[in-house]
Length: 452
Length: 179
Image (cartoon, rainbow over all chains, first blue to last red; front, side, top):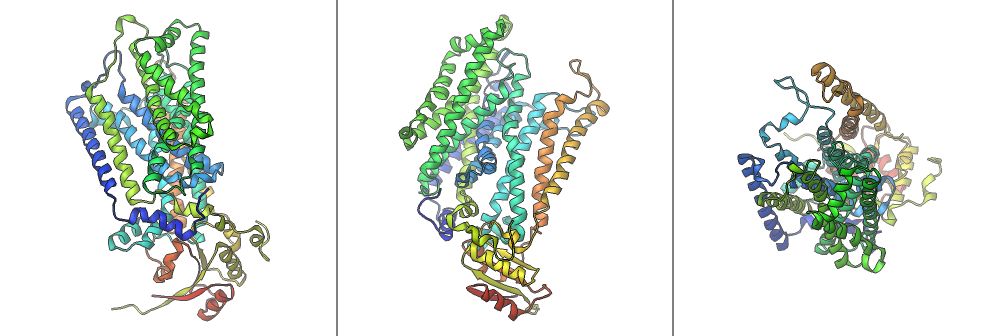
């Protein structure tokens, strides 16, 4: 699981050093680039608030464009973090311990990026609180039957629960940083953040159960959040959207793209900080297998959609799907098929899935494909729906591109700050899965204690 | 004015999880109650070794989950039938099927928040100051060392006997916590 036979102390040393050493120049360069992109994000949002969402390429009938595409894409990416931290925890997949911390952080930052898009799409952001069920002077309450409101609750809950889970996991490691702190500032900051954690078993016993409960609570969230996101589409009556396959299909796609992002980030992080012993080839290979499985689920969904559009005998459905593959957005459709269905097939071969450059490129291509999947769903169904007289081509403006690029600025800025200042591998958990952490069973039952 | 130096307890340092587990049984069998076993990670079997029952957190979270689900549903029902009855696409005012996603979401949200708050409450955290922090070796408890602290509040507490007991249970370093 962890290579190089580390001791407890060497785990502490290796991981803590990353956030204690002198800041590498490369980090400043990366932060500079990210901050510039974040500046673009802020600039475009500022202009959008000033001018209105007319600066985007949205038109009639394309009421949704890159904004919802980016929202769904970013939320989807978050799902791998929760799957790793919650579902793999419940399934006792102990290999998850060295990748869960930064995958959870990835979840948080991805959801932040995601929430920005619907947040500014409301146009009048100063009244964005209308979306929440708060008593107001008009005596009006939101429409509880609307998937858009479900979405606010689903994604809001998702973010909060992920944040709590992540922070609870961090507490013992923050205590480690506190105990290693040399400067007064670090002592105060990590002292406060670790809340006075003493690592006593009187704390661990509540802590462990809380962690288990949080994993149990997050597990249905992995499945429910993207299901609810998919209802934004499938509760409507547009051809190509109004299908029951959407919830499972979206969930599979979310996990697929999330794992691709984890692989991308893991390959960079392990090379940058020489953590090949912690994030091993085995981790990357297992993640490649998850991508292979979820990628094929996604491919299967594409196939079934086509089948049902024919089998339903619905003229509009049939038109929409044939149009997806051959119409004005065919280039996007075939990009999606290539990246999402063809590319992951290379993971059948051990030699290919254990090659870092191939894995890296494939993980990026998969996320390109998953972005195009959402674009194809949004653009093809809206641009050509029931009434040919209202058809119109959707094309993004420079501001759409700026917002998308800018959201990477937010994501990478947060991520760089995270890997610089916080332990991005869960030290306490890694120590717990080392062979020397396991007490042999005969020592276990003891002379007086009896079984357990 | 300086506070008089008090004895808060004794601290014994151990080498391995197995040594800590064995020593915990010894302390329990000697009849101590106010003691704790500190380790850099949770050790399986320690609850039993220290003579502690399973954490009661599950009951608290269970109650929170029921409250969250009830509250989530109640809010939607109340808002759409009493506070703001408004017929949308001919659906009944109380169209409960559509309330499921939010009921679930609020249930999970409330449960998760209560889980974390109750866990910290049970652990009496945040508490930034504790006698064990007077010890300098205790810094290793979050790194690679294992400790047992016996508090002076324990009815059986006697500095010398407690230290001897820790030594006899294999502690490689024993100290008195004063501060």
